[in-house]
Amino acid sequence: MQGIGAFALITLTVMLRKRSVAREVMHPRIRQETTRSGVALLPMFIFVSLALGFLVIGQTVAALAKLGATAYLGTTMVIVIVRELGPLLAAMLVLARVGTAQVIELGTARALGEVEALEALGIDPVHYMIVPRVIGMSLGVFSLTVYLIIGSLASGYLWAFLEKVPLTPGDYFNQIVNALNWLDFVLLALKTMAFGFFIAIVTCYHGLAQPLRLDEVARVAVRAVTQGVLLCVLVDAIFIVLYQAT
Amino acid sequence: MSEKPQGGVIEMADVSVVAMRDSTTLMLEHVNWSVAPGEFWVIGGLQQSGKTDLLMTTAGLLLPVEGSYRLFGYETRLFEEAELAIRLRLGFVFDGGNLFNHLTIAENVALPLRYHKNLTPEKAAPIVEGLLELLELMPLAGVTPANMAAGWRQRVALARALILKPEVLLLDNPLGGLAGRHWEWWMQFLEQLRRGHDWFGSTPMTIVASTEDLRHWRGGQRQFALLRDKQFVTVGSWNEVEISADPLVKELLAIPAGATV
Image 1 (cartoon, one colour):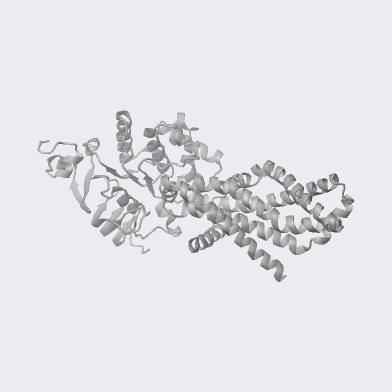
Image 2 (cartoon, rainbow over the protein chains, first blue to last red):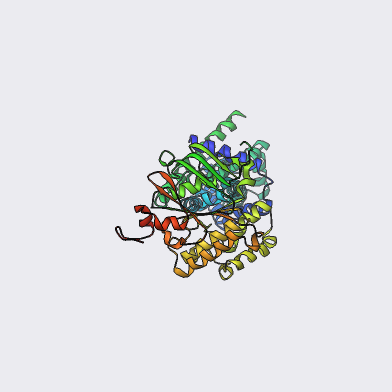
């Protein structure tokens, strides 16, 4: 874990110090990684957001209707989806879909000597290989979470409508707006960016930071994904404490 | 980094070299080696004798644990960002090429140029194509490294090392496993570089190559050295290699023990 922390600091330093180095190479790289960790996952996220809305509303409608508390439907959605499930689920999906591929890709590159090749050419491997991935994943998790939340809230209403819950779209929308405050937006942005950042760091660290042989790549990939899940849960816990404190 | 430019391009005094894989394993001790501009050195050694580690140290990719190493007259430890300009005066060709597998051949060769000069692919294209033409690699421009024969990968790595027009070229076992027509081409091309090729401003290039087979490097104005028992041993010119009674020289020349040259 200490190694990952140091690696995160190095990456941040390089990101800031070399922000104007080789723009013609780096900007296309950042676009490429953002597409990979964000845009390319959009179809899957549309499907998941529909499912998530159905699932949460389906369960809560039954429970709330018994108590005659369907007026809290919007509030429940905000607590469950906006604050917790949305960001964490988005992070897990990006970790599974992109993070895993990334460790294997970087691990193979490392084992085949591409890192030494970059160094020999005077190209900083952290700058060329890691910075675009960190930026791409942070933006990816953030924007995918936003889409996931919007999709789930919409599909949630659809489910409630089909269940014949007496709730107009206007009321539902008002419930949601009332349950949200400005801090939700700030913390959501911070939290999802942190998820993306740490997923990228942990996968890049295991794939790239240490010398690696080809036969170690699979083992390292498993370790990176496990640590990725743990780190995301840890970040989430820190943010719960933050919510409580404010 | 102190600035005391001296005559030699590479000046090693009492340098100790460690292994790339494991920095606690000492590969070479007390290396005293001086390379003048325009010289062509061939370093022979068996597997695990430290050829790659010596070249890596020469390139500044590995830290010499002891002694003093000057490159272009500058005392170097591990290259820092400030020394980038010096590093770019040196090209390195890895054993096997170490190409970027997700990039095409043209992109591989273009990357150092685009990164250091901040060029768009369109602006870099004419320079890259010129070099690929020169190395007869144009038909492979759009291919990725995994889809080409191993013999060509080494040549792509040469193109990638040459795109920034270095003054010193380090080649790690460049002829290893190459078919006859390939090494014929390599010998001719390296000889052109040593004399000074138009494309590189006609200045003679300083070349250091490592090898496990001295036969390919017969003749020419080359200097020979051996790596044996953690020592760097200077042999001299080809004539001295031929008359040497050293068993290692004979092994690297693939002469059976007991036979005469």
